[in-house]
Figure 1: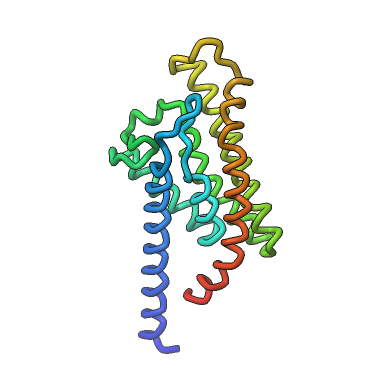
Figure 2 (figure 1 turned 60 degrees about the vertical axis):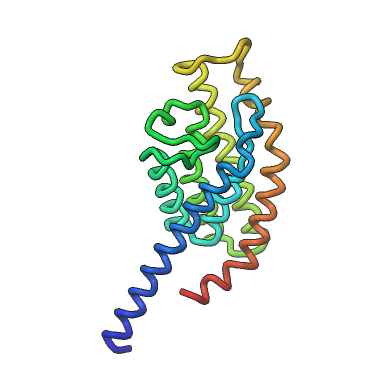
Length: 194
């Protein structure tokens, strides 16, 4: 391979990486607000977990996590890309900000598991593990936020925080399985383009 061909290949790879990262950051923005006006307890119902899982499964652990970091930074910069069209540094104090942070880890863990187990079952397990991580990190952040720095609803407890999460759980479990199956079929196509 000549040096000019190698340079073109490297430029193509960088361009593709930028496009994929941007695309998943944009999908997170859409997923945050597609149904975010439906709020159960203190938790908006969104499609963000689905897109964070897909980012990790399709782009890999590193690029998927970078796409989620880009999404978080855009929102923290003040653009209204978080649920309920919110954004800005003050969202760090929001009880649901833990879910936004968790998306970075969700994408990374899903991508990591798929690297180790690139089978159909591996993809589904990776998606379910990402969902579990999202719930674990986000719900604990929400509980801490309500107890420490945010005004908690009357009678709020750790059990109540988890009870709020039972409403979106069936949707998120179903979407995780679908994300795993979809990514298993789509990833070989994306890898051919690299």
